[in-house]
Image 1 (cartoon, rainbow, N blue to C red):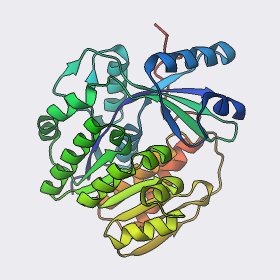
Image 2 (cartoon, helix red, strand yellow; image 1 turned 180 degrees about the vertical axis):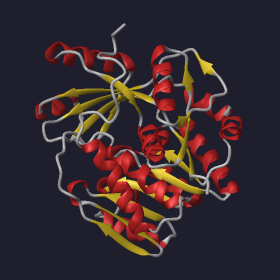
Image 3 (cartoon, rainbow, N blue to C red; image 1 turned 30 degrees about the vertical axis):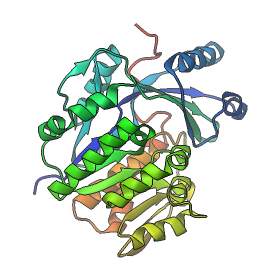
Image 4 (cartoon, rainbow, N blue to C red; image 1 turned 135 degrees about the horizontal axis):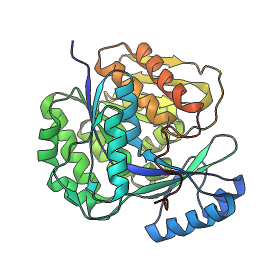
Amino acid sequence: MAPARLLALGDALADIVVPVRPGDCERLGVAPGTAVFLELDVLEEVLAELERAGGPAPVSAGGSVANTCVAFAESGGRAALVTASMDDRLALEIRSDLTGRGVDVPSRSTRRGRTGRCLTLLLPDGERAFLIWQGEPWRLRTLHEELAASLAEAGPCEGLLVEGYLLASEDGMAVARSAMRHAAAQGAVRALALSDRSLVAGQRQRFAELLASGVDAVFGNEAEVAAVTGADDAREAAAALARGGTLCVVTLGGRGAFAHGPGGRHVIAARRGPVRSAIGAGDAFAGGFLFGMLSGRPHPECLALGDARARTVLGVPQARTPLRQSIRSP
């Protein structure tokens, strides 16, 4: 039997991790567990300030759905990331890292521009906050224009995952709509990663539109899932989505996770173990769960696979080996 295949759409980013004190997040205007979108020059100023205070900040290949693709491939599946490709050195390094980890990166062309980056503020308790420049503002328009050809190059799949960060712009929303229609035509599972609480709250109408058009599975943490429906808590939100025919997979941090779909609710308790950083843990959980789901496993087994993948990144400061020691390294 051929391994399950996942297509994912989103941005491949350079992840830059900087240890900070709790007061630093407040000073920079970002709450733990959330993301703020910045212009590149502002993000670079913040990074320079933090590096002056704490030394060089290592850079690794990242991006939410890219992390999920890696976890899916490491679980035994085949994954492909459809993304807008730049021609800078970071893009080449990230592509090399992903392909070396078993993730295909089909690309119709590369464009002159700079790769997006995510500055991760890592707090002492392992929690994190994100300052993000997603990339060149025209990249998603280009991706949408070339999407049909890119999806054809990627080939058939059992599941397609859309990154919620795409819904931050109308160009990204157009990519998400087209991708979901492509998945429906193939009979593939249509999955949506919610990505960020503040994004979901600010773009609830776009998320609601995409869900109404047909989404088979939603992945998020408690705050993100509650925000997507406006419910008081994640359990109420997941139950509402399940009544509409959507499987809702919710991570609970140190308390485990649950999956609530039309067939009922299943829970997995957290296993104790060292936690150095939660960076990429939710993405890895989604990769493990999706591998099980697309391989035909029952939901309790999918939860266990997701938990196993998340555990591999909870004990390390960065989910992937750094590409270089600083964004400014030669």
